[in-house]
Image (cartoon, rainbow, N blue to C red):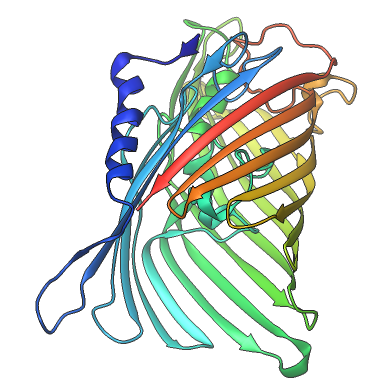
Length: 406
């Protein structure tokens, strides 16, 4: 049985897929004889998830969960030399996160002074690792699900973008290769239906004792460097990001807490990446960790400090994929997630994932993927209500996804 939230939400992806399939070519809007056209592109992805033991990324246990959807439409315009204006509207659903609510994914203006230096501003993508800035571009990757300890499908409002500015450029290093850089600053706004809010709610006592109130806008600064080595196809990168004063409010009533509680702290994220392209092979490896140090206050008790927390999970993965021809590609990865804030032997303290994927591209604008996972541990389930009992036994998950674009 395929599980969906409502008939409307079940037919929305189907209708979008039909629209996308009817026109695989980009659309252009001509503004006049002296102006370049506006290019429109779009995509729609529908996936299915099924797991043997737990509800992971949705209601996937004991059936097929169809609440796995992404769709977007974007426009780009080059009104002057070295200038680009682009925007994208996006909607997604992943279990109880997203809920098909449309939002502005990015809207930016960019000017490139030279190969060495450029600037973009507006709602921009946050560069981090190999995939963070192209999480929604299903055609750009082999796998249905990227390693979830780094690229969690539920956390788009945390990871994908920010309102601010970005400086970027490429620096040739002669025979030593080349380097590219991006440095950014701005603020992140969170959705009440996003992955971060859902994660906080999941850690609260059940209603009426616990309730989520909201997350404040967070200033963020960071940057990413890529070094393209003299070995053709090999690059290595590093990314750092600081969320300064991440804060949220919850209510935790007695006997579980003092009532209204305000948590604030800083989040420092680090990500290190390597990628090697050789003939039809792609090899990738990344390591990711973040440190959250926060303090809890009780405003109803005169702002009294009631606790503090520190968290430092880490994830790494290695991946390889092979392109047979224009129609077929296969890939595999192994990833480990570790949460050091829990008991080391608890299955909630880790999650190991071995994935194998087959990708088929019937057309340039249409891709289909089927992917199997063997998973040990439950550290990334993050849904206590639907997974009350957990153990250290291994379990299986099947993910299927198709994407159409124009």
